[in-house]
Length: 281
Image (tube, rainbow, N blue to C red; front, side, top):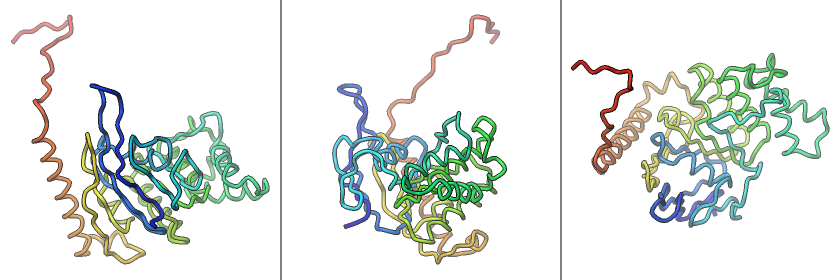
């Protein structure tokens, strides 16, 4: 039995004539300790898939099993790093992380909890900002707090919903390495949702494209045959990296072109102008 299993998942929104099928026939198995990346276009249903796995949403049909038990509601065993920061604005950096750590480790002493918080704040290079509130932080700093909070709970599975997209290239690269270092210590199961093919290849054991919705479904998997630890600079000259990267990008381009050709008549905007506009031509 796989660590995480999705069987024939369908997810629809709305009812009757307004019903939209977002995800269709999703089947996925992730083994314990495996790092899987799902890559796809913006708006293809990736976040909906994350919310189903985390228990924030229930599938319209199908089943999701985590360690053989049906997923029902959220659990700190499945730690999620969201696209948005989801920080409580009235709490400081340290307090936001402490609240999550206390929930995950209710029996630990106050000093032990504070040590965990301090170590993960340091990991994302935010020690000088530990007593600042979210409004005093940049967007990238807020995302780093969200990363630290999820990892500090030491979940059995890490689920990442495009968590590094808002960061500058240097910070993004550093956090990719930190996440990989933490994953590598005890090989916690990890699922990364991303629209960055290079990020997926660098971090994951295999990549699975998500075909764009509506009725989005998973495409063929691409196994990443690169030894760990991986060197970003060396990858550019690695034949296996180039072959895998080109294959994934070509597949995504093909399904993107196919979806365009299947689209209905293009939406034409009406020729309207503001009242103050004077048309001379």
